[in-house]
Length: 295
Image: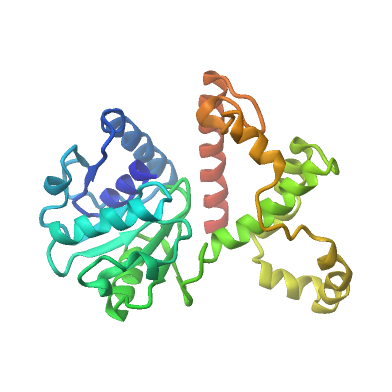
């Protein structure tokens, strides 16, 4: 997430500095940022760079000195995030905005240890952040409205799409919908209703294809609310409603099979296959975005 966000902000005209605690991540950052920038070239995104590149630093204080905006993209661990935000609160100026790229931790919870909670806001990017143009903007209970308005205006200035989430609920909106779909998908595979590959085909070439063009609420109107009411009256009772994670997933994770990062998860991956998939998916996402923007 970090390199893609950094490349997007730099391209939008900001002076960008990046920090990581991992020496390997710092070493890889310039290459990953350059790759993201080449994708932005393929998208035909305006280049408003003021000169220079993203500077990468292993020292947090040096990285955030004089910053107007700090975006944290650390792992989804609330204690880690609270500790970092508390530390940042002491390092930056009183009016520097602290934004969290949390995937679903309520922003109100992240405001706890900050002296000025009004400047803390959710800025949830989708992965890959340099390709997906939609960014969720989430205010916590104490976030200043002026900070929300600044964030919306800034995102629009990058020719991206801000979506203001009106209530600070866990998972916000995008991930609540995504995880509802994933819960049903995992359950169907676990129950032997369908194989994983066929499920992916069904979703990508069925509802996924439609939803890229017609949002769920518009789809209700297109299909007919009477149809939704009729089908929902019996189907909703049959849908997966478990509140834990399915055995299909927990068995894989307990065996160290975490997906692409470990070379195997639902599917198996060689290093060559990973590079091939990453390249093909980036090209396809670029093509889809161009098609949607042209429609």
